[in-house]
Length: 322
Image 1: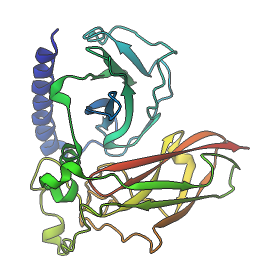
Image 2: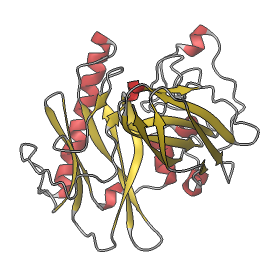
Image 3: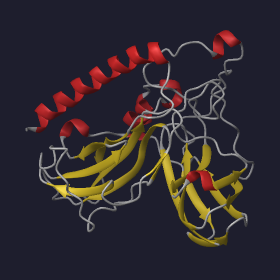
């Protein structure tokens, strides 16, 4: 199947899905659990050295149910020829290519532009294919260098509703926040023992600048239906830790971290949640927190710094002993 044909089919399928979800939402309001999680290919852009960067994320249709899907036959990547893995019934797990840095813990709702994969300059018409299996269903995302998928920082901002959904052309040259971890990338801690985490984050271009727009305050303002399809959030530097690999319910952060996924419910502690208040950064731009685990194992924590439009990531691997 040609890319253009499959792209058209994908767009029509997404439209049908949106219509179906809108109709379903009118009947059931929201689905808390029981639905699947689907991988998402977000697009690509060229690197300075001639290689290309491909962006991936996912959509968990549930509003509350989370998934832990380890790297393996239910969560893997392939490098494939064009359309080679269009047949979802085809098993293609290969341990040699399965792990390309994807998450194994899946939060609810939309988690866009969550990680990237670099491909060589001669990648051509091949595809990076992410396969996820959940709730007994298979879904795939096909990463390619097809021209329609080329993106820039403005596209990313638009897709995540950054700067209240602004389309300002200055967003095309927006610079991602600086993010520096204080301490080692690999830690060991015992069950029940608090682990200190410290990062320095800064927005080098201070754009988009933190907004002085007053947040909604009255019930009519707060519970007003959204004015656009894409959830929006206010601009301004923020930082949060999340669990990228490992059981999220076994990790407790202090203080509680702002959600990094698009939970649009009122007062949901999410940048996309009314009243859209983004806390002021610490005076020294250093975020200090602790995490405590109640189960042994290996965890990967992901720190995410954002200016509301672009993101910078930092991983910490934690070996938790009994």
